[in-house]
Length: 123
Picture 1 (cartoon, rainbow, N blue to C red):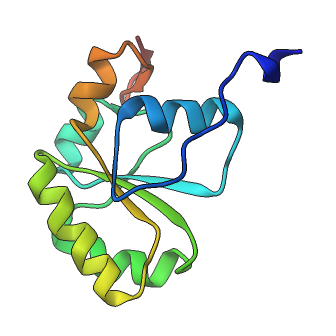
Picture 2 (cartoon, rainbow, N blue to C red; picture 1 turned 120 degrees about the vertical axis):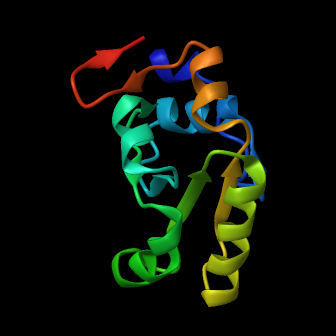
């Protein structure tokens, strides 16, 4: 059985490694949102498969109107510090399940995980 080969995901933490998120995605846990806080141009060049683009300047206001407070949210930006600043703002607004994806899309690519572009899926 395939599920016996995939390790169960780690509990969500304030910071996550790309391997933690990938394990969770492979496990089939859809109740999460991956948010790319970089510019739309950088998002269009490449992003973590399944991520949505929410530029930093609009992040908190847009998420307050679209994501429920119980949602698991994984954030990445140009730097981990930028993502952590938005994570703190979201937590102050009432979101309790927010995690910074350490290394962002660069770490995701370095691990060999699939990325998306506006043109096609790349590996």
